Length: 112
Image (cartoon, rainbow, N blue to C red; front, side, top):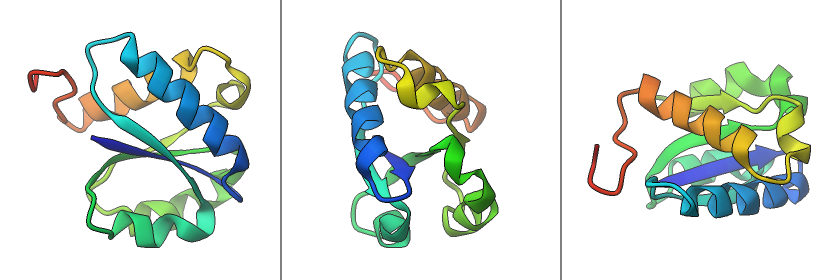
């Protein structure tokens, strides 16, 4: 499953995506986290690779409605402010996991 991590230009999202991938590797959840800038999001959402969730940096909260309109049927997660600085990836991981469970998306390696 592909998780898009979005920030304004893609710089801070790169760090969050990296930490999210490392954190996911420690669990029984299988996904790839990809960084994206806000301007790239529409093309990535409707590209050939399915997107399981979109993680949005807290500084982009004013764009949430627009992002949700573009991401029809895809969970959109607003990362808490501490999520950008969290070195472990736990904050982003918990936010994504909660959104996927709420959407009924299987997250385990065996679809559970």
